[in-house]
Image (cartoon, rainbow, N blue to C red):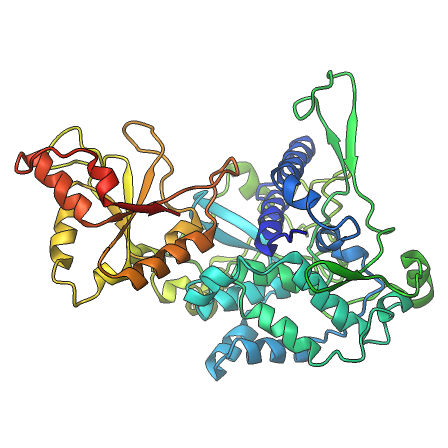
Length: 511
């Protein structure tokens, strides 16, 4: 049986949140189409993994629809949950104070600069977003442990942990409590160990799953158009799943499952006990009107750019909708007006209070590890490395290697781009195609063949990333001895004799 990595579910949730919280909002028809495309594309991409799971395993669907799990009581309280996070993130007193300051504007939509789209995106300032912010602030995204470990956290592992926590609480249904084991100890420690292996984006969604509030609802019923099927346009095909009738399970080892000894319908439990409410304000609850406030930014005091029509509407006091409907529903109401625009003074005060909480306090670590080349080879106009990106092994960058400067000179003479960390590979920040030829970029890892142990360890680290292309296929990386650069440069200058299969002589493998 296969398990689904949790970060893959988070990618779908990030995409759906970007569509729902977009500013200005999408038209209802366009929003519905984009949500349907993202929904169908994700399930098609992970079809093989989902089919290889146990037939009675509902963990993925429960993860996508936490708001219907009203038969579970995680016994989450605001103060104790914050202390729990502080303990497992090893927060200092300063970081605790920073996390507390992030509560300003709790439950509101705030604009956050999106450098990829070159615009401000709206995000919901809930407990999940604050967990994401503090994890970025304390460096969880750049921690070498989480760079690799977050890909090993599975949906099944998280679902099992939440089942164990809920089974210990009296507020849960009889079905959930029947899954309890007398030997269960330190249930929250299991959750803390999961948090310690996650990066900020996954930490945000895990927190929202625990609080049963995404701020929107993942659709359970999608109209599949003829574009996705072989049927004619006159036929309508609907894809849907039923979460309410699924039976929770608990896993035993890698292959076994434990079924509940008592089956209580989820709807009857909600009727008798009432739907569980969490003590965290949500945009989906009509508790207060939402205001548009300005968070700290990585840019220099750049105002939110709006069109003339949007500016005129901001002069009118109008709150955002108090409830976001399911994004897959037929009737989607999109607000036509936005909240009141803050004055220049209040916007400036917000920036001064929260500026130190964002990345502007320290430069982006990605920029320190990416060295962009000129793209022009000094030896020849037809360089074999014109579409290559090199990944340098730590063993050839160590101070004891005397050829380090010579290696950098070789890279610069070819005009090549190179990176000194594996982090950019996981962030999708490197170009996919050559700017001049349009060919797919060739990734080559350079190592020192004389250092066998370090080379093997480095190749295992690359293989553990399980890099994939946009079409879902494996993205392979060649591993070569760094002297390949020296040999090719000599051939281009005419100083070396032509040898048979130079690449085969210096290639060590593919990962």
